[in-house]
Length: 356
Image (cartoon, rainbow, N blue to C red; front, side, top):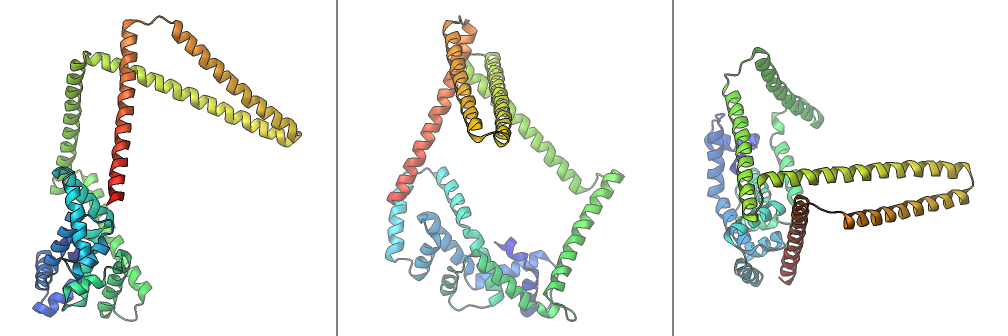
């Protein structure tokens, strides 16, 4: 939260001017000043208290629960939600709950809300009742809070504009500053690349990051290969057989995809030709021809399927082909079972949420 609030440089500069008299351009001092101001008004402790209640209860409407909690932490609505949460906690593991809480906070933008409230608190100054202050801003929404903070920053720092600078001129000046900074960074990178100057700490850090990522990828592939070979040995197969089965599957999928694409292209081309014929000739004849073409295509598919089934039933399979076929079928069944299990889990989770 402090890192985001440090970005409001003008607001922080004014607050430090008022409190300390002299401003020094140091990020650490700005962060310390923000921390002191928020701690003095007990905003940080209130944020931790409300976030702890949300992480324990996990209500469907977090901002509504936040309003109840700030009004009375022991009201009926809060206690009832705590009872539901206790029943849900017993069904979840510790690791799953931590991931669920992180996703919950990200989905409802709880951290962003408190960051915007803290920024507005820095602009408004001292507040007598912090709970009442936060409760009044719950219904605002993140977008309106951000807009209000921008407006307050502009009103507070309007005296910095020299001359008769309007909003458009100020926006152009800010944009020009950002573009100049990006251009200087880009120019530095181009100069280093042309001069082959790679002794900079940034280049070394980037090289280490790229090397570490490459090593992690190689180690992950090696680990997956070892794990897969162990699984195959337990099932009575070798890694070469698994690779051969995978190659057969890829070839079959590629062939099927090619056939589908070519048939689809032919169908689209024939349809275009028939549509052109329908525009040139009588409409009824073209419709009949389209229907006949569709019927022929369907009958050809039926005949091809029957012919393929007959050929497969009369064909003599080798042991290797039978093993590969069994392996492919078992893999398909396993994937189907996993999808079915995942769907059932989602349905059970949705039903439990609806019952709550």
